[in-house]
Amino acid sequence: MQDLLKIASQASIAGGALLRGYFGQELPFREKAGSDIVTEADLASEATIRAILQTACPAFNIFSEEQGLTDKGSEYTWFVDPLDGTHNFVTGIPQFGVSIALVHYHKTVLGVVYQPMTDTLWSAMDGNGAQRNAMPFSVRQSEDIQRATIAYIQGYAAKKASAKVIQNALSDHAKRVVANWAPSLDWCLLAEGRIAGLVSLDSEREDQLAGTCIAREAGVLVTDFTGTAYDPGMTRFLATTHPALQAAMIKVLATIDLDE
Image 1 (cartoon, rainbow, N blue to C red):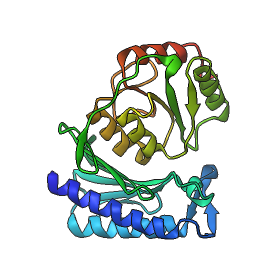
Image 2 (cartoon, rainbow, N blue to C red; image 1 turned 30 degrees about the vertical axis):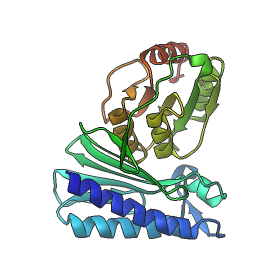
Image 3 (cartoon, rainbow, N blue to C red; image 1 turned 135 degrees about the horizontal axis):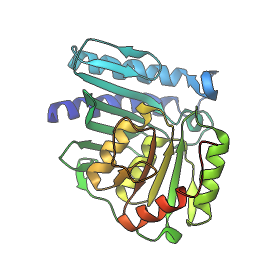
């Protein structure tokens, strides 16, 4: 498994190097469903990453955001987001990254997230802890919701009304609620304890798998909005650095109805 982590790391860094070269240019883009966008940089990063993964692991399936699924009938599937944070990238905000996860059947066995503008690589293997630039780390805990910075993530299919309800409810209790529009990086910030909590509503699967792997291996508590234990099929996540903060956030979310 260590060899596979190395391959994923190399692929993410190669894709990220391309993104770094494109960043700041005036790139044309096209809109996809749900107001998402794609650029030449997305496609170049994706092609490079897929080539590396396919060469190293020709029998594995690959799912990537733009090309979709290449199904080899394998029990292993790579999940690739070649540019997480495309809106930030296009508008000149250097908060974006590359996310790669390997799933064995339905279990995430490794994840890597690379931030090319800071040259930071977060990685984790199931049961082996998390690393930042090859150095082990664990989460710094924060238990007071009134002092907590909480990241909010939503997928393109999420209802705008639900987003406002969640953000308003959390803002009434937390120090700050931020929406960075780069989910994989939010998970890594949480894994380090730079932020204290995270709420994710109906976000795309490829945006979550690597980040949740890294965060959980760092010691982050990940459940659904009611406290039900993590399952990779979940579409709604609540993640915190401390059980007391987890309980407080569950209490806040219990006061709102997202299905109205």
